[in-house]
Each structure stands twice: as structure tokens, then as C-alpha cells.
Image (cartoon, rainbow, N blue to C red):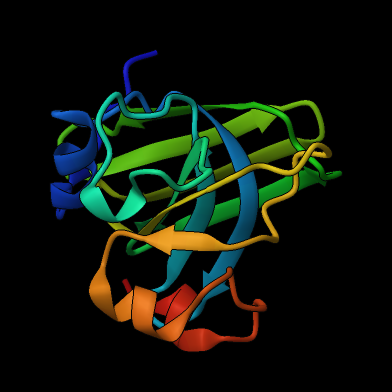
Length: 167
């Protein structure tokens, strides 16, 4: 199904890929819920790696791009299955008739997630890293944004509210 999202700030992804990369399949790393908004933030590994990387990433041993997708004005949240790790999940979004809202679904081996939200989605914390042989992402991350690069060398723990709550 075609993803019908409006990425509010796709600049970092467009600079890397020349366009918005496919978002219908990715590796789901985490889900962060915030009652303010309310929001759902998905930390995902994109399914493709860009052909050309920023100068800061050249020569670095990286093979995966990760980012956060933050959904705003979330309602009807349902998480009926959560058995990580996930290798690949499917994402779909369907427009709700007559509204600027979507019904989003993330499904795959071990996860079943659904919610409704605004069709405007924020993108943030874009980084590159080398996936470990077991698929984990705990090593060094090279962030596309200067502030993220100054603050973090790796993905912080989930209680780091400024990282997971603000893009």
C-alpha cells in the first residue's frame, strides 16, 4: 500500500537520498509514547543505504541509516504484539476520508501496532552506523545534524527525553 504521509521536514533524508526513501518497510528499533501531543515516535533503520553520503560519513565504516518518525495527535493506539528483535516490518498508512489524518499500521514477525494520527510526520535524528553481526545498533552513530553529533556518539537510553521526544 502506498504510504500517504506528509513529511514536514524531509530535508535530511532528501540530502542523503535525493528524494524521500521508501518507508513501506524498515527495521523497527523502538517505540516511544508521549502523552504530550500525544505522539508516537518510531526509531527505524531504513531499508536502503544512500549511494552518496555526506563528507563527514566518507571513509567511515557505516552501512545503515536510522531515523525517528514522529506521529502527532495520536489516537486509537493499539500494540497487540511486541517480541523484538525485528528484522523487517511493513508500514502502511491509509488516509481517513475528509480529514488530514491517517490510520498507520506496523506489522511483521513479532509486532502488531496500529494508531491514527495527523498525516504530518516529523523526521529527526538521522544517523548512520555499522550494524553489528547480530543486527544490533549499539555502536557509534554518525548523526547528520551538528547538535546531535555534539551531544551523542551512540543512541542514548530511552529515558533521554530530549532525544526521543524532540526532533
